[in-house]
Image (cartoon, rainbow, N blue to C red; front, side):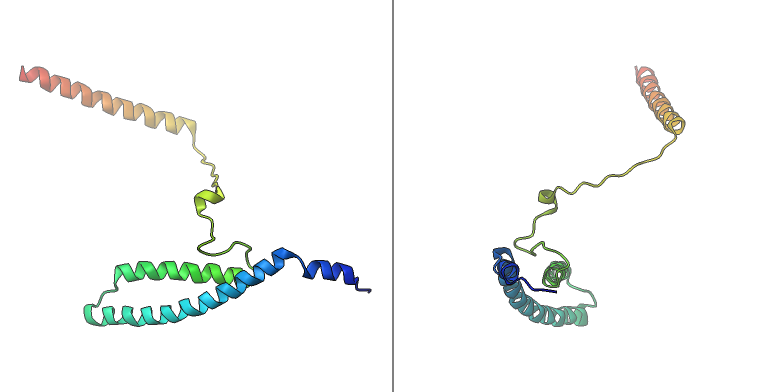
Length: 136
């Protein structure tokens, strides 16, 4: 097997690969900081639990955001995804995520439910008009 030096050189010099490396270096540094902060927050959460027997909800909510960031960052660093984590992460609205589902229904059952609903509403209207006439 012969190695073509020109092809290797082209692959190594691709800007996209070096851009990813820079982002990986940046996120690795940030991840190290976030893990240190998380350990401190875990201790603070323990103090809340120790004195009140409850977890601090605001801190718990913030911790869930940190966990999501750590998860997204690890996926990016370990090449599980090419999507960059926060603050470069696209929101679900920007991604245009569409969820499709099929619902199987028996049209006769649906028609019967609609007829029953209409009959119930009609009875309520008739009762209300009867009570208004009785009041007069």
